[in-house]
Length: 549
Ligand code: NAP
Image 1 (cartoon, rainbow, N blue to C red):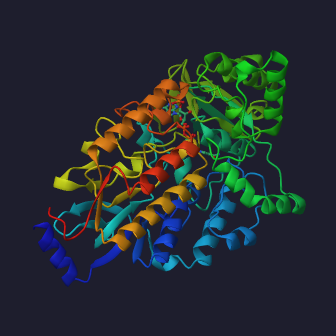
Image 2 (tube, protein in one colour; image 1 turned 90 degrees about the vertical axis):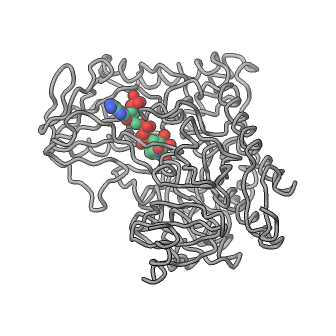
Image 3 (cartoon, rainbow, N blue to C red; image 1 turned 90 degrees about the horizontal axis):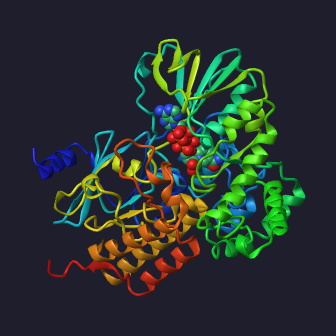
């Protein structure tokens, strides 16, 4: 049956609705986008595959899950009332506290009524005749929308490596990002954890507290700096609330969107000054350690000084010199992969029930009904935890079948790498916006700040279109090519672009290697987006219904 006839059938069955905008995802980005759309008087519908709001903080329920950006930096700033009403209890918020926060926001702004939970967007195609997106959802509905906004997230598409025999495991197995809400009782059980990225580093100390044995399968040793988490007392909360607006303004002027002071270049300092700065950053704790010197990601010598400092700190925490060596044998520049922030991670290896298994030296060969086999032996397990990460940046977008002008599939357009204009739009996909899409600072920044910046930019663009009578916007191919080249050039100057990680797509077999995030800093990125808007959406073609085709 033709698409039009399918639609006609859908209308007949009452399954077709028409909205100004459809938003994919009810995480931090989707919630705020919906709020702004409502403010513009747009009719909108959000589709969320999870059973509740919060996105990342709905799905990642594993023990120890916690944000490593400070609570008062990782929250919305669009509402002064919200900022006054909400209190954070710790320096770094737990998954549970963040989920409560996003639920509070959904209720506070009455957003739930426009969200369809448990519903995935499966397909979306742009109908050029009507300038409408035709969207098919997993519940069998077809929806028309003038605008389609992806708030699907940068880390939503789970990556589970294909290991021979994985389906035969007879015990309990879960990916950290699909952890059951009711939890998993690991008490007295033998637990295996594959993966030592941010998720593995958080879950391992927690399961080690009650499990009989924990086997950590480590392929790549990683830097981690202490979180130095602590509860916030009344005084600390008052101080943060009072300084919130000023901190928010300051964050907008910084490369990563954090409220840390800007750093000096390592090469401008003598050895004593450098050592003092590194030690004080270590004592302060948190992800800002990667920003200790402003040349840390560009100057190999500066990077190596900070890297050596952390490797020595790691070794000093471990009782067994052989284990210490394996944990501190880190062979990439610090900060070139997402710097991990830990709470008692390395100390956990001093427990008698925790064993580090080096699967770089002796790789995992198969999963059996009873556990994990490496080239050196078999590990009997009751529970297997996959802390193996995500198909980042593009995974969630490409898990849907999105087709633009002429039926071009986004998957085909991006077969050789994601090309976007400003990380907000893709040429040939009119009226589609991406929040924190590839080509924007995204996960290299404070996500809440970047989400608000994108949502505000999109909302302002939609308001401009409505006021000026435009019904269609598409990024120009040349503007997209220029921006994508700029993103690539910035990546080439940084140590980040030269290191294998999920940031460079190296964790996904067959994925084109290359960093898809904008490395020029959120402050410069914001200026570039503002300039495009101020120049009448330069690099975009805007069309009125009366314009000739
Ligand atoms: P990740 O950083 O991609 O780590 C995945 C881990 O799984 C790596 O150690 C990887 O080893 C290992 N792995 C994958 N396939 C394997 C295989 N076949 N055999 C052995 N090991 C294998 O994923 P993640 O830890 O979920 O973190 C992803 C991102 O999510 C983070 O970078 C961060 O942006 C975000 N996150 C943030 C927080 C937070 O705010 N605190 C917490 C969790 C996650 P290799 O390194 O050798 O590939």
